[in-house]
Length: 232
Image (cartoon, rainbow, N blue to C red; front, side, top):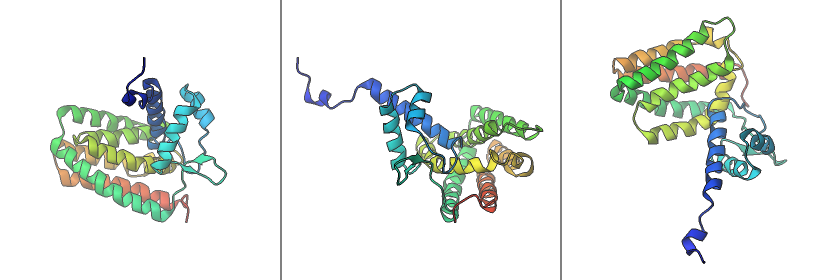
């Protein structure tokens, strides 16, 4: 029995699902800062880790290359892009504008449930800062979770989607801040800025929430640039 022409054009559902899963998992690695700038991404290793064939991983990587979150080198290997200082400053400026707006909206629209979620992640991140040997990987993840808990409270899926696109590019570089320099948890301002943002959102002070997120982004950017870890 012949299938209608429209159905012939549809990809198998399982293949689409696996491709989406592979894309989501690789996005999470980038957004969470678990991949560093310049780090190569082996399609074969990624497929093995995800328990899928090469095809969905290849599709996911192609999407991430189109997103400019990954790049193909002249020898055809795939890696996380190395960002220049100018590119990183530009990205930080865009993040301040958009993520600051999201924080202000979170202060205006947050619910009691949002406050519980933001508060729980803020407390977990702060606890890491008090440890003599904080878990750098966990701290990186908690930093991301805090920011996205704030942005989720803005009640705008489109805004969160835009911010995730920015973090696809920023996440690997932020890896240089907390993962490579865990002392930043004790000496840097992230813990204080997170607490300031939570307090502002709790009292529905949009301007203060915006300022706290801007200060957090600026502080991390200044530290990373000062380490000379970016391309000229």
